[in-house]
Image 1 (spheres, rainbow, N blue to C red):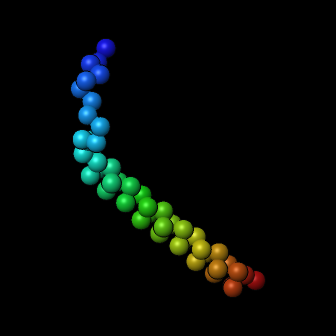
Image 2: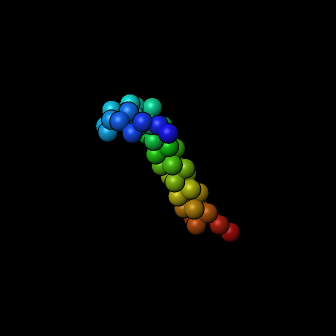
Image 3: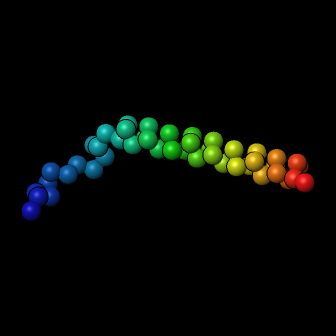
Length: 47
């Protein structure tokens, strides 16, 4: 088994994870805005 002493809490580089999460949040926000605009458009211009 792996030696338990190798792990040091708080030393992992999380910059790539932070960039990925920021990209995910930006895309999620953009998709939500587009969905809201589509729903408003359908409500206003539905025949």
